[in-house]
Image (cartoon, rainbow, N blue to C red; front, side):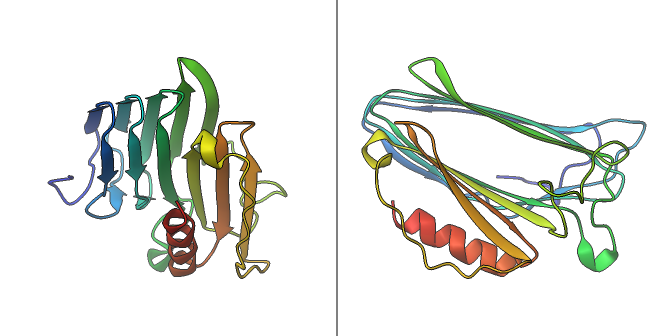
Amino acid sequence: METSGGMVAGDWNAYTFLVEDDCDVTLIPQSSTKVYPSKFDFACRQTIEMTVGANARVKWLPETTIPFENSIFLADTKIHLQENSSLVFGEIFSSGRQKSAESFEFRRFSSKTNIYVNDQIIVFDHLDINKEASPLFELGMFEEHTYMGSIWLIDQSLASREWEFPFFKSASHRFGMTQLDDYGVHFRWLTNDLCLLKEQMEQVISEV
């Protein structure tokens, strides 16, 4: 739970979770995370440390992180699973407040995700955008899109499942899926339509 209206320069939100064996937990953010402008080069930081026990299930439902103009956001997520535990972890990145003409006007946005199974790393994902240095609008980057959604589904019982989603696609709304060997599946969206993104992410989550 975020008790303020957002993160101001120098704030550090640290979350530590221990999910015991055989538990079934759903974590729901109360709202989007707003990252306010940096003052004196102070960043807003977020760390998540999660340990999931044997035969336990965790769902982290997605909400949007919105970096304001001139903000700095540094996030680091580490999740440790057992071979027979299950994870659904969702995130949504917004390029900023589009109605205020602040799309990609933040100074830096960095979000690292590390997922381990039996202490072996199976996922390392780093979205690192620097306003001054990142080629945002090239092929293979954001192109014309303003939102990115991700779902990490780690569950060996579902790794070989045949997934079929009759999702709407267009030049401004794209969807892809990648198998993570025998560990699970990764889903990712690039879009300009936040409502459609959330609808499709909820559909994927409802399947598991």
